[in-house]
Image (cartoon, rainbow, N blue to C red; front, side, top):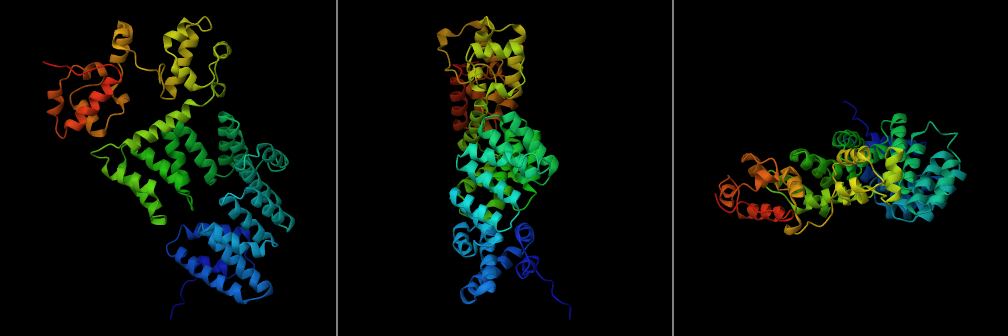
Length: 439
């Protein structure tokens, strides 16, 4: 009779010599291979029962296995209760520190991680985890001091550059942060945290192809954070790949079926072939809002342009985008080359001059401004999929094309009804425009 194959999880949890690296590998296995999570749940429950009846080293080993199992299953509060009993050991204190960080007890995490290092756990690994706990607690200076202590000795370690990038983000040094994340990925192409941050910032800046590539790399690593799958799903939706988005949301719901936000996203993805939801608009607006907060000092601008921005107290992309191009051109601080440079910067981020300004009253519209509005692409109106398809089918590429159409012409489009018509009229009103009233 053939001998049954031993579970990879079981091999780790039944090995009395298994340590931190083995348990980290077990977590990857649990989220990668079918059936391993069920095995982990069984072994964890058994270890919890053994820890109640055993004594000495045997009890400590059972408690460690139970605590690590709970940590892998993301049951952090329960894990803390179990691991408290083995916090005098290097592995027990280390995993206790990770669990305390996850429940928001950052001070407790720092203390546990220090105990782990004192007990013989890898000092650098513990220090980087402490850096994260201190950063998340808002203790930036303490985190930075601890990071600097290892900067020379561990310059070739990806985790150091990842933590450096997170601290630079906190200081709004976004360009340097991205360089640190890129360095981390160069050193370790499987560093999921650095991949996610690179994806996130390219996503915010409108570099969709790069964002997609980084998100997909991060999504292929197990275990994957739900945020990676959500953001990748939203990006797929923006590209019209709704089935791919729905598949990602299903992965999240398979682990957490009560996740209300993801349930909503999944519903949107399934329905998006025919309908468009306000939540999608909100997500895009959130991305734009974050982009507008980026400091202009992060971009490689000419000295003259940078000086002009400082004189006008223009600090962020949002400050710049709120001004009209004419206001910039009329300022004595800028020449034509600077105006061109700033326009190119905004366009590279999917922005334009005049964003966020209140629409002028009809009487205030002069011919040049009206002409600018009329040449705006209809794609910038954030129309629903159904409305946009109708507009495109009528050959409308700009707002000027659209306002030459009547309500009757729009309503004659297949699958186009009063709701879609009201949407278009509402969007046009934002530019003080209306549809043609008669042929």
